[in-house]
Length: 445
Image (cartoon, rainbow, N blue to C red):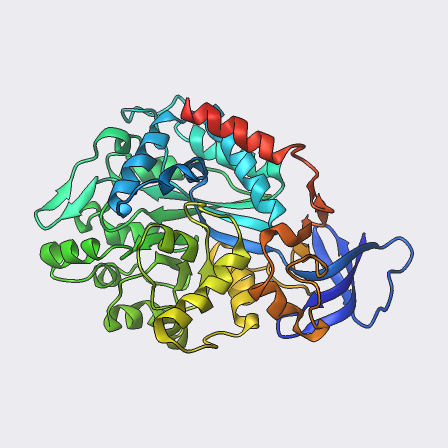
C-alpha cells in the first residue's frame, strides 16, 4: 500500500510530495520530491500529520457536554453532575458510548487515546462476574472505532482528602474502588493488551490514594508501563496535602519514587517551583488539557516553565467539552498570551510534537507520532481549502494547522495503514452523530 501526501509535516518542516510505503502496519519507505501521485497510490490532498494522540480521556464524560454549561459553580459542583452519569453506566452502555466517542476522535485526527479508567465495578462497589468487564468494554470499543488505546487502569481507594485526613468512598465513588492496593493490583494484572491496546496504570490522585496504601509499592509495580496521575488540579488538593503530609502532592509522590520517564502528571495546574523541578528533573511528561481546565475554571498551568525545565508536554481532551487536539494545542499558546500579554511561547512545531510524538510516547506508543520508516503507519490529513484554512502559504501549513484548523478540517485518518476516516466519513461507524446521540440518551435514561 502506498500513500501520496500532497504536503507532509516531517517534524520540523513541511515537505511537498511525499510518498509513504506501508507494510505490516508500519511505514517502510518515505520518499520526498514526488510531484504527483504515482499509479496505484492513494492521494491524500492537504497537509498530512502523524496521527494525534489524545493523552487524557474519560470517555463517559462525553455525556456531560452541554448539560454542565448551565448556571454557575466550581470543579466540585461539576463533579457531582459527573457522578450522576457514572452511576448509570453498564458494560454494554459504556461500550456503546465509548465506541461512538472514539469514532468522534478518529474523525478529528486522533489515532491513539489514553483512557484514564476508574469506573470499574457495579453501583455499590460489587465487582462484575468479570472484574474487568468495564475496562474490556473500552478496549473493544476502541477496536471497533479503529483507534489505538492505552487503558490507564486507575487505583482509586478514597473519596477525598481534607485537612482532617482521607474520606471514605461514598455514593457513585463506590464503583471506582478496589478497597485495597493489592486488590487493585490483582485485578489489573488480569488485563490483556496487544494489537491495538497497551495496558497502563494510574493513580487517580493523591486525594484518592494515600501514602499508607503503598505509594512506593505502586511505583515499583508500575515501573515498566505508562503511569499517569491527576496532579494539583485544584488548590484545595495542595492545601489538604500540606496539612496532612507537610508536603505538596508532587513532593509526596517524589519521596515514594513515583516520578520517572514513564510517568505523566495530568493538569499540574497549581505547582510550586520545587514541584516543577521534581517532575521535570525526572523527565516525566505533563499532560495539559486546556479546554477542560478552562471549562472547569481550574486555572492555567505552568506549561512553559515545565517545558523549559525538561518535561515533555502532551495534550488531552479530558472531559470532552470539545474533542479537538488542534484546539488543545493552540490553547496552550493562547492561554499564555492572555496571562503574560506576550506572544510566541511555542512554535507550531513544538505544539504539534506535543499532540503527536510526545503524546504517543507517554502512552507507551513510542514508535508512533512520526512520518518515517519504522514508525507505525498512523497519520491524519487536514484540508487546506476549507473556510478556515484556505489561502495558507504552503511553507506555513503547520502554523495553519495549529492556529486555524479544527477537527472539522480532518479529511483522512489512517491507523496501522488502514483508512479509518476517508473524505471525512468514518469507515467503521456509519453514523457517528447518531451513535453518539443514542448512546448518550441511553446513559441519561
